[in-house]
Image (cartoon, rainbow, N blue to C red; front, side, top):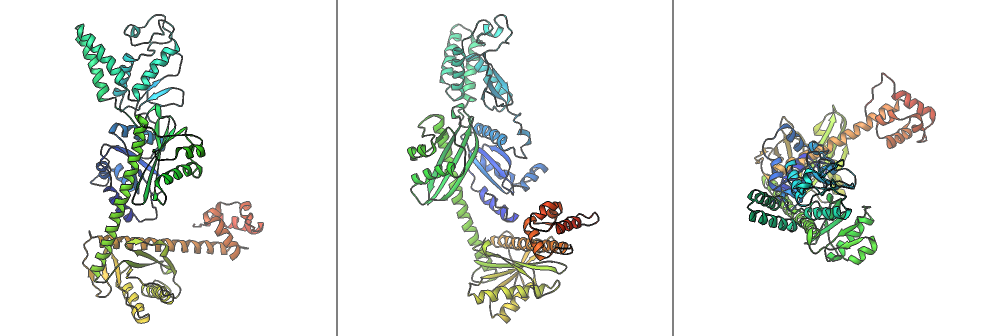
Length: 607
């Protein structure tokens, strides 16, 4: 899940951690942007190597732009590289990611299609239409599709001639056309051939291989070695190319597949949603389990449809320990546990993905715990203080001394505690007085903590240098009698974290820029700056809003607050009609004044 309120530095660190948890298996990966939208889908023989390559080394401009927008990624493991290709195509056609332009219309990969007509044909197409035809594929290229088509036309021929033939066609004499050009072919004969073709695509290739072996032997006995070699090549093609595919099959129809793993008190559940034989969507959840696993998974499946409003398929595939009777009674659909075949393979694939997802979670939890524990301890050692587990950090923001504010962020055990963040409007200091701003905020914050007998932080980090550090220490030590360690986060001329200023020695701390402690300081500085800037923009926007409206006749504090609450910005008020404004209970005369004032041609407004 993408956390868009994290800093870019924190996102980068989380991605680096996730890269270490990737499996070395084939599958598909989905890249997500800051809004959680899938922006790129790819496939890989080795997920770890492929996904890591995006974040290592130099790339062309297009790939560099893609990587800059990646905020998270996820993966689905498959049984083979070919299955990964098929799943990739299905997912691209479903989600249409912006960086998969080449595959958006599906024209890059061919399918075989049995046409829906009185005398059906087996044709190659690059477009899957919503018709009654039967589709097989996609194939990696036209050559593979053509080879398979030719194989099936020889083994299980359908119509190859045109509908206007008046006599037996050339292919009929070669036994590669079923013969509507020569006689009326019964529907039952077509149905039998189509059933054989479907079994072939579902992996049941023994029948056709045995038939080809017999023909090869007969040709050899007749000394027709060229024809025997052709049969041999067809057998080799089946064995090397026509692979068992668990990703796409007409057998699947419309069904959902549920797999789960339970370990260390956590339940990991994966749902594969198959439509027209393809995985079109994957849902995943990991949460603490408090009941028996059988009860947990049964309850999850029932709520999945009843509470989350997912459409019911014809069938759901579930592990054997799920209560089938309860689910069938509640959902009124078929609930089954396949014991063999392709459906069993799909169920096992779903369970494999649930296991890998849970393993990834545990690895990330361990990494995070190790990293944050090490970072806070390193930081404490650098500053020669007992602990840095509880940090409070401050930053100020203003424009030429106006609308001065401060933001405070809190980190506990190396992680942001957003519920403890605080905002301050500077009240007693005018202008751009960094020393005075710092004194006011530190005084207000720690006077309150003392009054409420709240725990004090192990360390205070000021976004700034010696001025902010001295101001903070002056209030803490000389006014409040506190000895909380203070340090300053110093930036370079490119506004990036450069060093840490020890508040006691007033000297720069010799920190390795690759250390966990330095990265923690970077994250804190970036976060407190973001928080303070965001609050300043909010305050400035409200002030601009108020000053612009206050000059309009009839607009007082009550009317102004109504407009602010409903429209949120001057831009939206400017776009509103008199009727929309009067609906808020504002008199029509005042509404006309508002519209007239905000839409004056020479008047510029900001939102």
